Length: 85
Image 1 (cartoon, rainbow, N blue to C red):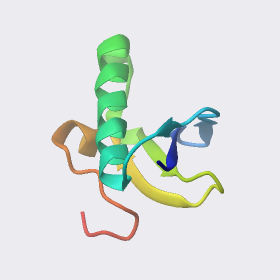
Image 2 (cartoon, helix red, strand yellow):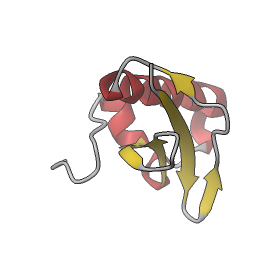
Image 3 (cartoon, rainbow, N blue to C red):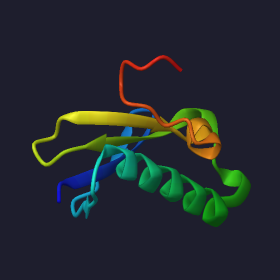
């Protein structure tokens, strides 16, 4: 199974996922990113500006496969880059 990495981006700050997760495909990775977003928001409560944070999903070589904005993650609209929002 491929390994996907979930980097959290907030403005110029970047929190690197050094371990990643093995998942069956990109759709599963997008669902995982949406779950990560829900968990962060539950932990951080109102301290997070959802409009300024996103999760970048990459493969092992670092190629960006998808980006999920926190707002999109709440509605299940995580899409690969270049997709129409």
